[in-house]
Image 1: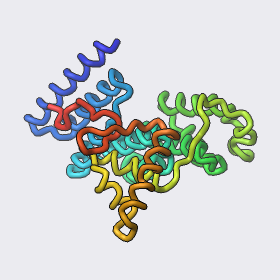
Image 2: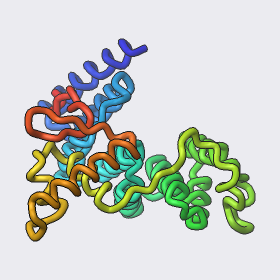
Image 3: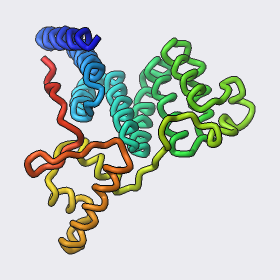
Image 4: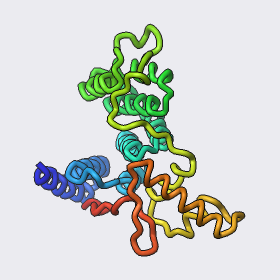
Length: 258
C-alpha cells in the first residue's frame, strides 16, 4: 500500500510539472495538492505545514480559492494533530470564510464545517456546533455526510436531534476519544506556530516569545519550561538540528513539486 502512494505521488508530481509547463496553473496546483496528499499517506508522521503554506500562497496569487481553502483546512488538521486547537480553529474559520464567497455548499465547504465543529467540541464549546453541523448535513456529498456521521459516532450524539436543543447533552460524560483533550496555552501555541513556519534557534525563539525586556537567564528558564510543557503535553516532537529547533523531522517532500 505504501508503494502505491509513493507511485501516486510521483505521477502527480509529473502531472504538476506538465501542467505548469503548459501554463495551466489551476490544474498544476491541484496536482501538487494531490502529490502532498499521497505523500502524507505514505509518511503519516510528517508535518506538512511548509508545503501547504507554499501552495496556499501560490493559490492566492491566481485567485484559486478552492485550493487555497483546502490548504487552510489541511493546515488546521496539522495543528489539531499537535493539540493546537485554537490555531486549528483560526485556520479552518479562514477557509470557511473563503469558501462562503466562492464555493458555498461545496464538498470542501462541508468538510471545513465538520472540522470546525470537531475543534469546537475539543475546546469544550460544544454548544456552538449546531449551525455548522446542520449546514454540513444539508450538503449531499458522501464525504461530507460520512464526516458528520463519524463526528456523531465519536461523541455519541444523535444528528436528528440537533434542531431541538443542545446538540451534545452528555458528550462530556460519554466522550469516546482515545486521549484526553488538552487545550494549549497561548505561549505553547505560539511556539508550535513559530516552528510550523520554519526552524528557529534558541535565541530567536526566546526573543519572539518573551521580547527584549526580560533578562537572559529568566527568558532561558521560561523557554526551557515551555519546551518541556509542549513536549510532554502534546504530540509535537520538537528536535534540535545543529543550533535550530525544528518541528518533528523536516518533510523530505520538495517544496516545488515538479
